[in-house]
Length: 256
Ligand code: BV8
Image (tube, rainbow, N blue to C red; front, side, top):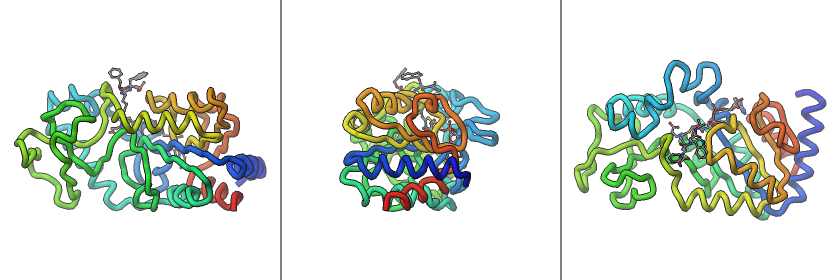
């Protein structure tokens, strides 16, 4: 770790230690060290395929089996993935602060596995299915989710045992609105916080990417954790250029 990064981490730890309300939003990069591929890095999930071909309602309507294969392959690949020190540090951080809100764009469930209790999952959950009878993500209450056990896998597209409609992965696709309550809770939290960590995201997908700007406009200090510069970096108060699995534990150590 360079001296400059260590100094910046100390600076960020001092900001967090004085804050009573802190938010954190994570993206795929926080799970990279767990072996979960990101989207836009080399070798990422979107390499060689277009999101609109596998992560939109239109793609699912055109070829549900192809879309299911994309998500089943991710379930299988993710089954072996475990939380890394970055996830664990965020779970510990919650216990060091008066108020901590964890928001994630990730659908891998690793924050829960790391012990983070309340996680605002903006883009849904890879491990759940959703009945398609109600098109919108928010209406899944019409038919309760069926928790798919990835080890079972499917040999054919699952149908809802309650209404026999085709099931879909319980995630938010491009062109779909985010779960209203979850997004509202995230927006409320970022408007109230004094500091916001933005970890492992290229900040290219909206409305999630707008949350840091919302926090900054409300006066929060923005701390970015990412090995590379992103669309957010020029607007962040502190940039911690390093892998979150190394930086976040150092940040928590600095706060203790
Ligand atoms: C919507 C779930 C209303 C499925 C995903 C403005 C406002 C509103 C909407 C839009 C808008 N402009 C455009 C839109 C439309 C669109 C959008 O944002 N498009 C982008 C591409 C321009 N947004 C939507 O459609 C959203 N819906 O707004 O509804 C509406 C309705 C109709 C019409 C218009 C609007 C829905 C978006 C949700 C889509 N679903 N995922 C699935 O996962 O399969 S998005 C997908 O991208 C994932 O959720 C992912 O989390 C997210 C963001 O990607 P990142 O997490 O940032 O990952 P990425 O690979 O990009 O970056 C990884 C980063 O990690 C890198 O910076 C890398 O350097 C870093 N990293 C690498 N290693 C490490 C690391 N960092 C730390 N440590 C490491 N070791």
